[in-house]
Length: 208
Image 1 (cartoon, rainbow, N blue to C red):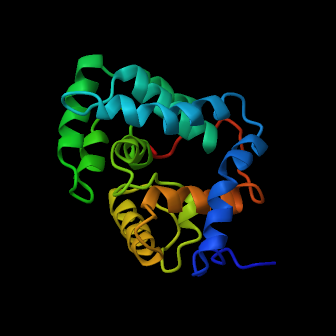
Image 2: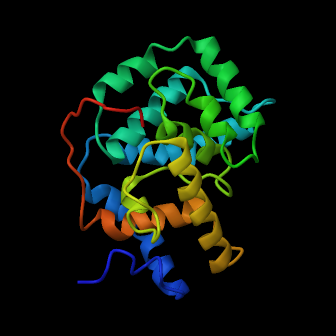
């Protein structure tokens, strides 16, 4: 059995491209309800919606869909989703406008977005990742487990800073055609079809 870090340590572009190209198939293999639909929206539509606005931001319905996408790809935490839905729509626009204006600071957009109820570093990273994939990878535990030198995943801003920095550095080493988001998806697909995750409802101990 290959070590979990096998792809991370590979310098073969073909291996990385194979993993990235398998992403859609691995999404389908999860057999999770709306995940394919949500994933296509998150990757194919949301970045353009954000970029087309005079001031970059997300709306409350978009933040809810980002949260649903994140949970469908990981662990469904219904109480967190309820809290996200309960945010004031104007507050979401103001907060996300401020957060995305803080790009390219490595962590400030994540910290600012996480001020919203039910939003932790992982959900916040979903917003930042859609707006600036060259800087902010989505925060995922299956990906983090493949990065040598990182401790056990902690859903904190400090851990995300280390995680994102590692992916930025590795993307730069692979070459200019790679972004942290591309690496995150390749690494998720690399183990996602093999390991999978529990899909049951789980009450959150911390916001993701």
